[in-house]
Image (cartoon, rainbow, N blue to C red; front, side):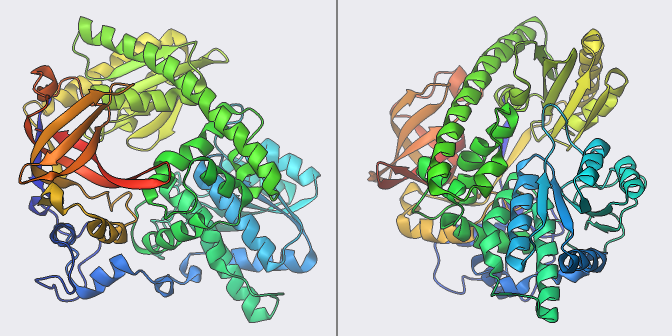
Length: 589
């Protein structure tokens, strides 16, 4: 049953503001400068109440960044890399295969080159054949190739055995990471990780690319002090990579992350990297300001598809290619690869949804577990996301690879999460891990039935405990459709970037009339809405993947002439060289 309660965000009980920081300075009771009413409501709802905070939101300054040497053992890492620079030793940058690791690798490689490092190589493990982690077998190959120093990016804090192997091989290992460690830390020359438990930097919100950027900043400071810089080095040039890594890894968009992503989106919009520039052009994102949502929803998935499909092109190739002509040829392959990914995903989603519907017809499951040998391993996470969104149930989707079910799990954001679900059924799993709402797992097909039963038992117990409760959706501001104007959007864009812990504002708009509607491919709905008090004010609205159990769909109450109120995000729609304002609907009634 669809039961969602709408509530103003300012009624949400919390002891701190939306960014997890105490409010600084004296609160102001009215806008310090003229701004739209709903923008002021957003600031108030998120307890951004003092002049310094308001200024920091709209005009964050790079001078506010923390000292990179506040990161524990940063001095050890810089000392060793400085010696490697002076001796011309070979350095390997070893990064995770996701977009955080890839962005961090591209960032640090370019940063080191700007500083004058020459003897650099890099490595990323294969997502499908090697899997996540710092692998001892790779370290052995690097040693044979004459590598002296290995710098990890977004990986390594749990690599206890690989760190010991590096010692045995005589490799100096510098770990830069942001993930949580195990019970003990690896024995490395330096562990630069704000979340390792012994670092007081307060930079735990950084992603892997962020930690890599701070390593570059620390090195730049050392090179300036020693007089080693051959020319002026512009650190902002690297922020295009910082923005991609930070936005795709879903780390909190606050403090340094907020400052650097805001500047990074500007840098990405004018990036000098031919591969990224060509991809932006192919997606009609070039030549205009970029939002965090442009990167996360339209740009990044095309790059992610490369590592998911593994067809000879990797995301890193787009970051590093230097020829405009070669970049265009590469992007053509990227677009085709993504089209193939979409086809694989669509086929898997169709079968997975059919299986899910069968489960829902035969019982009332509290979660979904679907697997099939026809599923491509690279799309199971995307299919799990689709199931979780469509059926509002924790979803576990697997593909058959090398005789094992390899899968991904996605939560709805409401229940305790899928990682706890995997822990509850770990007796059936070979391995599992990840985040609260997004995780991976592997099991023997012979144990699939037992695994499904254990998951259902766990989520049924959660559902019983939550019986009778309703999902609460908080909105930031209330107003009228007529208030969503180009002037309003300039203020709205100034509030950005939006992401984790600084979410896209949700607006409650009242007294709207449906003028027309039609169903789009994929089950989405497109409406034309008019303000009942200003009938000439009309805007298109898109409702993506509406839940089948929604009251207006079940009662067939969605029809022209119907009066509505909605929860929506405004956005610009760019099409054929023109732009228009539209709404993306979150809910309506």
